[in-house]
Length: 335
Length: 282
Image 1 (cartoon, rainbow over the protein chains, first blue to last red):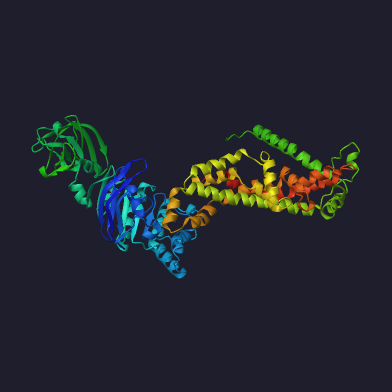
Image 2 (cartoon, each protein chain N blue to C red):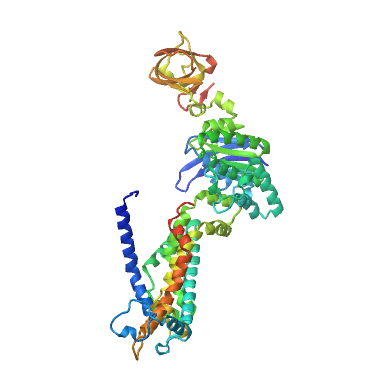
């Protein structure tokens, strides 16, 4: 096990396109870090640079105390789980698990022991002699994780491992990954575009946008104090309401802000609330309902209990500390 | 197409049966001819049913051969053909799979040029370059040798393309997973690429074996010693009997024997062959 340090890491493609720039992240030993951002934000590139599958054009990656910039992926002491599992289709599950160990000249008895251990942890014992094609998506995902576990690497790298699973299985596997990581205490770097996955899994989140780090922090920190309007809109579901300050000039303390953010759950309906909203649509989620409306030309969403009364126009109020203000020019948080 | 009309079924079967008959008729005539005596085919009417000389004709061809045409016994020629066909098939597969591997997985300088050079050889089959190739083979002292029979036919752009396409369908993640698993290039080739292109190799082997077996012009040109006659070229020599009538019954017996190995290869590898041509999922 080891810490991972990304020091001013950047990637410029031969054509001059910059995918990632100036990324600094210190990952402690045993920590679970999730890289999250919209597609094309450079999160996969970043992961692949750590893995050694993508060359590093600027800065440094250190695993433990070792600079690994020029080291082959196999020698970086990492294991990776791919989005499409990347299992060897012509090998049985057992051979899939053992392949990396065999290439490292691990003694046979040791391989067998580790495969047995991993298959017990992941409950894939019954499928050890099947080919990947005979497995369901969830089972393949487990085998892919097993292949990472048997290596006992310094770090796990996950590249959107759950994206190919259906919604229900994704939730179950998410929990499994979390428990597994807690149990093995292996430093993990996990890439996803799903903010919910990111929130639930991470010890710390790294929110990326356009190849730059927008914010690093614990899920709750990021949720409660988003560093920029982008983070505010990306983290949390339903997304935070972002209203241009000029649409609600009467709110106190918002004079210098560009955008005002307020989470849907922080808005309450009160007869004399300062924000007047025309209701446009209602979505029923069962436990609660989402009410979409408009105020001063801006879209706004609130969550209400499913038994709350509805009307065509509502007045909304909020606690003063629930208000997030973002700068006019750069979208950064103003505090 | 899912249609369930008996009339259509009937028509489809009739068409297929007719096609089979058209293809099979010459083979049948050859078989019938190989079972008759030497004079039956000179009489003006071609018999359509097998005659009584089957064992006699075939044992003569397998044992002694036809002394008048200067060809060795069929067994020798079949062996020569087998060596040539196998060398061509295996050689082509080995060379083209390696060159496809290089072109797809390595970023070396002039990769594009290398690819185009391979591509250009598509325009240069043996028939086109036969005189210079003969010159080269003669200068190398390879006339009347197995190497001379097979090596000039081994380079193959078509097979290289086929393997290139196969390799391109193998997901990048698999390559990356193998890299992380510590498989070097040749290990990756042996452990991942070869098993994954197994069915394609089999399909290609069938096609190339028949291609090699049926080579006619090239062996005819470079073999002057009867020890190296191949069977397809040998049949031609038999039919060209100089002082006398061609012994059609023996020629046809030889032709029947010459058909057997390709048929055996096709029948034996049929399942892999079809799989290799239609399978797309990796």
